[in-house]
Length: 125
Image (cartoon, rainbow, N blue to C red; front, side, top):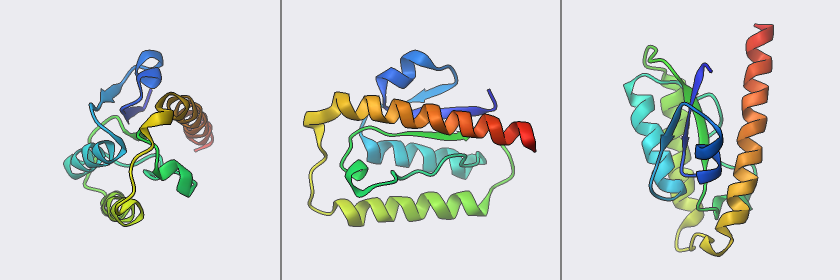
């Protein structure tokens, strides 16, 4: 694996190696990813969900590079903007913890797809 998964999803944790497990919610995962990006890791998957409904999820998994690289300004900009977008979108809204298990399954399927796409792209480059 040429990536690390930053996640708070127990299904992902139980099914993959190279995990940084975060005790917390979606926002805590974003902050942890930001910490790693500032150390020199690069974003591989986009930090926010594809739909507004996924912003209410307490669960998130994000792919970052396994190895430290040079500081990637693009990754820094994307993660910082994602944190701000999350804050603005959530505002006074509450995270949907009632459907946590469903969100874990959805997030697991999304991260599997992201890993497959990453593997495919790695093969053709």
